[in-house]
Image (cartoon, rainbow, N blue to C red; front, side, top):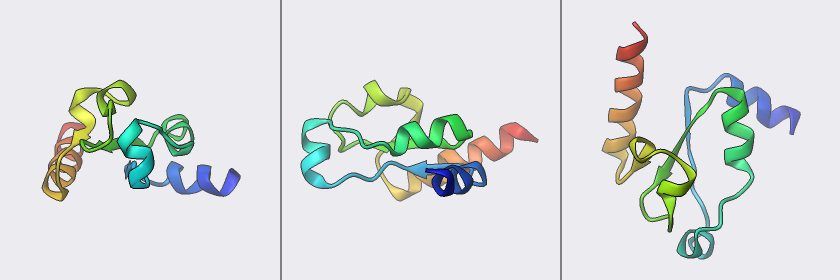
Length: 79
């Protein structure tokens, strides 16, 4: 847990990738609960059932391009 906190603490964001069987039923893993307290933005792929219940709709991503857009938007707003 301490190692994960260190990685998340140095990261801007993480994509909450899940095994397909978890995503299909909307079962989130512990990663979201490790990332958020460390200040790491959790981006949820849209194919996770109920993704918008885990993260705000602005953090639901549909593609790699969406991930890049969210990250670049966050960097611009911090300047």
